[in-house]
Image (cartoon, rainbow, N blue to C red; front, side, top):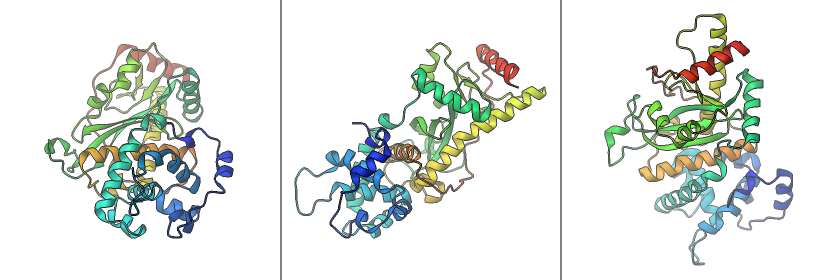
Length: 344
């Protein structure tokens, strides 16, 4: 089932929700207004209610035991953990929850949310969707035929029990190297959450289904990537040695447009501090960490679609592979030269 919030007009949704009442006065929906809900849980009331409607069937306990935890409180517990990265914050915020119960809630809720990622994280595959993204990048950055920006970002985790050394990133801590693609609106359109922190960006890209899909298409447009990526007709990288004013103008526009993926990562991590450097490493087991990261990506897109505000905290720790990729595909060179000739 797709998330209602991604498709239902907000004016209709709000009017539908007005009569919804939670009678337990310790329930967050009863005691907090929208501003406080966003501060604590990063989402306003109507977004949270949609999550409850979407996930409650899977989260509700199979029995109506008196000590079972309602689906709505499980969702609040998960949101509070995503927002802070702290089990203690969840326990202090929602009475009656122990750390073991919070841990189980995080694991279950994250698994359920991550299984719905395809409902909310979608690469533009139709002509209409592709045109909308292309027009956005062209009007904002003078970069034509751009379908998105790709990059990697490190998310710290606790040392895993297997292949521990592989997860030590070039910054010296254990991490997952997450590949993300975004559109011009800072919406994540593709993510890969599986590779150890020591894995090079180009390797992740080379083994991705999106790369395989783009390579199998006639030219429909391209992504923007930094020097870590190979130049292909479907992946534009900057010139390593710009010689002319037009070359330099292209590189400047490319860099400005490519900043959109860094901005997307910044908003995603700042909203959900459990994956931010300042929130510390994810302390859950590796499979749950993967689900948590994927779940926060889903929630990021919902928040961005709904215009939910977020205060961005820069990490200052973005991936910088520093090693230029020497692959310079001829068709990629031709398309890049055409863009420079026609636009710069």
